[in-house]
Image 1: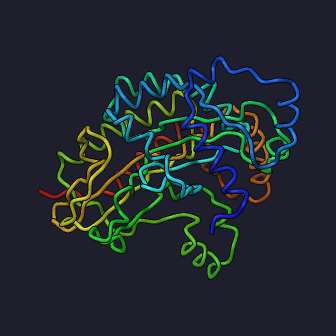
Image 2: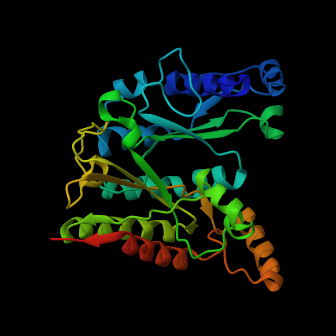
Length: 331
């Protein structure tokens, strides 16, 4: 059940997305209103950041229907993590290192990259929201100050006709890094951690043709090269598979095989794939501090590098090796 905090944050998000950005640009607030808002803990005023840039991506690159996009946020049955129609997800960026990196270092390169790579498998981020002014809630980190809206590649899963219980999802990262939640706990507890999805392991193979694989590899090579250039690590491959006889629909008008569902060579499965969680930048202060802590720990424990402390170049190399290991070519 949604708690009071989540409901308040959800309402702030929905109001920001339904407000006219042009009207916001000319709105003025009195000192009294700003001071009054400062003492809010959960109810904060969010505004769209770089609204024109995201509208360009939605309309010109991904060809999303703008009216349908707006309608996704109209329902009174507000939820915190996703829209009621399941088409879009809400991800909070509570850490300053994350939202400052996204705003200052990532946003414009991401826009430029998407303009020339419409078939990219980087998750599609459709809006960026931030607190218009500081509040006690955001300063004390009781309430996230920034959020991104992104596509939900499982948007059509919950339809009963599409057998939602047969869909499988895997959040995959290179497994040869040191992960404390896996490597510093006894094995029985580690097995329990797997069931709680602290990390995932795909124990089968993606059975596809060489042509399908070449398309996937070429796209992910380009996407990870971009992520390396903006100095990002710790991103993951979100893999979805579901029975091949199902014919679900995705919201975009652009038909991209690895977003619609690439069919396995044995005819049993369809696969979808996107890259997620590319908000950890190596040059940000928190990442540098964490790297120092891990290096100090390794001087004694010698557990090896973590995915969040390695270099962007090495992480990309291991990520592509992981992709190779997931695939089994047929035909």
